[in-house]
Image (cartoon, rainbow, N blue to C red; front, side, top):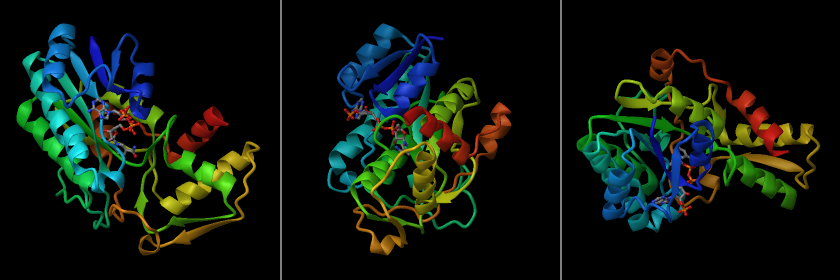
Length: 280
Ligand SMILES: NC(=O)c1ccc[n+]([C@@H]2O[C@H](COP(=O)([O-])OP(=O)(O)OC[C@H]3O[C@@H](n4cnc5c(N)ncnc54)[C@H](OP(=O)(O)O)[C@@H]3O)[C@@H](O)[C@H]2O)c1
């Protein structure tokens, strides 16, 4: 199937391009999704059957200051992509986030639970979803959480800090599910022909940010990595100095994905082992 991937150069786009043979992947330089004329031209010229939008402004804290750029990439860009995907009769697969939720739910979020983003990033991603739904009927929006893989990501930051510092504080009151980009790319492939709508996908299992950091360090220690770090200290969010507010508990319910695709999802610790095996 003729497939166009946006946001090439990003963490997820690289994995999606790797498993979808023959797909054309365009970087921001090659296709800026905020430039409607370029989006129109690219989609008309390439005439894809499927567009996978992996482009986005993903710097959650920076977005609090850089609202206009976040809005352009996360809300206006998806509108352009949806409008012109619809015009050329391409299906749009778009990636969204658990940060559309406020994190106050004690049970995992289903696709139609009420959104209430706490951050500029979450708000702009939610607006992007709404713009897509207004612009095309043939869309699949996949909300995912705590994405990591080859590229800048939480485990990579923890590993780098653990080489530099003797003590590191990580929040233990933010709960979610890590998602390995390799597994999300497989899920995207599994959803290419799914009924239109919103789907949730992450790896199985639940962790705090502290647990995720702890497990990452243990996994790399097992593989011989040495760290300067002596103490990994669990702290509460109020003690950490992040700019953007983040949901306290943003576990996603993946029932719809599993029922639709018939697939099982690897546990996040299994995924982390594969990540460490590839990265160490
Ligand atoms: N990372 C997470 O924890 C996480 C969690 C949930 C959902 N998501 C979503 O998953 C998707 C993929 O995330 P990721 O982690 O792979 O992000 P990423 O590594 O930051 O990649 C995003 C890519 O989009 C590009 N981009 C930014 N603005 C663009 C524009 N106007 N036109 C075209 N390309 C543009 C970026 O280029 P530059 O770097 O040159 O700006 C970058 O290459 C995003 O939609 C994100 O919101 C991510």
